[in-house]
Structures are given as C-alpha cells and as structure tokens.
Length: 263
Image (cartoon, rainbow, N blue to C red; front, side):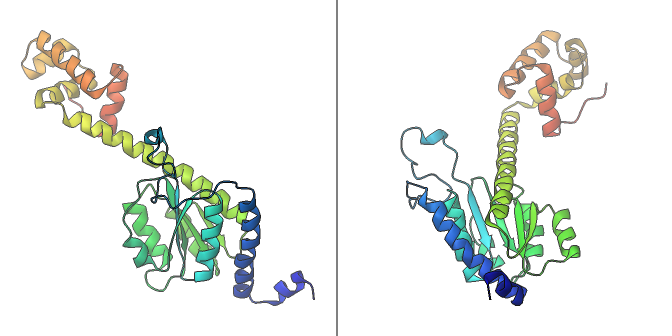
C-alpha cells in the first residue's frame, strides 16, 4: 500500500498528525539553506541587539502558538524559527494570557479546541485587548458556523489540519504585515496624544477654533482675546503638534477627537 492509499485509510486526526510530523522534513531542508544560526536573543529583538545601528532595527516578529498538542507545537516551532521569526508556544489559553505583552510585530496561531478557554473565546478577548495581534485559527474539525464566527471576529485565516507549510506561512506573513500597520498606527496616535497633552488650556481652545475653520479674528472674538494673541498661540500649536499645514492640523484633531467649535 503506497503512502496516498495509507493516508486515505486513516482517520482525519491521524492524517493530521502525519501531516504535522512530515513538515519536519521540509523544515530541515529550509534550514539547510540558512547559513547563520539563530541566537537566543531576547524575545522580540534581533540577535544583533546592542550592536551599532540596532536602535533603528525593527524587532524580530514574534509568532505565538497556542495548541494543546505538543507534537503540533514542536512542529510549528521549527517551521516558524526556520523562517527567521521568534516562536513562543503555549499549551493552553490561560498560559498564553499570563505571558507579558511583547512590543514587536507578530501574530497568534490558535487552535480552536483547547482544554480550558476555547480558541474562539480567546480570539474575542485578544481582539479587544490586543488589536495589534492578528489571529490565525487552526482546527482538525472545521465547520462553516465556526469559520464564519472566527472571520467575523477578525481572524486572518481559518485553516483545517493537516495544512501545507506554505499555506500557513503565507497567512503568518499577512498577519505580521497587519500587525506592523497596527503598531505603526498606535505609535503615531500615542505621539499625537503626547503632543496634544503638551498644549496649554488656551492653546487647546485656539486649536479647536482653528480646525473648525474660524479665522484669527473670529477666534479672538470667540475667546475674548486679541488677534495678535491668537496668532501667537496658533504658532505655538503648530510647533508643538509638529503640523506642517492647517490641513495637517485638521487631520490630527480628527484623529484625536477634538470637538469642533460652532460659532
């Protein structure tokens, strides 16, 4: 009996284990082409951290794996590491939740069927608390209602075991790209909030009036100050907010949720 006939005769769960263990061979081939060894650098940072130029280097993407099957965790850990990413594996949802947040792009490869908190329940929690951590769900018992629920909750992909290495790796790359974009957006928003916090109460009032479209003279009338004083405050607002133009300042105000002034 050849391998194809043998796999067809096995139960889906057995075929899943064969598929996961067979990926070790392809991983070995992938690793053979990689000359440099992966060091034990701190999670989320490249092995060269601390060397010249490392301050501007992007942290190594971290791929979290939550699956109660140790053979699956070990296979995925090898596959992820061979691609140059940092794997972090967990046997349960609660074990993952106890892990501190890592400030690096990444994603979560999550089994639907877990012994404590289900994968879908964990997905809903992570989607609220960690919008920068996209999720890929894996399952040996896929069904349409489950897949629909997962996709509606924002899953990048729902994969049924056994799956091809390239399919999972493609989903991980897509998820990491999403994570980078989310972290960049979070960083920009945080910087805007810090700049806005540096404004004085009067400068915030002037900013609200200016982004509402009021002219300097109208702003002065609205706030009971002279036009010259308005210009001075307006200049400080532009500098502190690092706004290149009025349009730029308007976009910043919208992002911060600054309420417009109605004359």
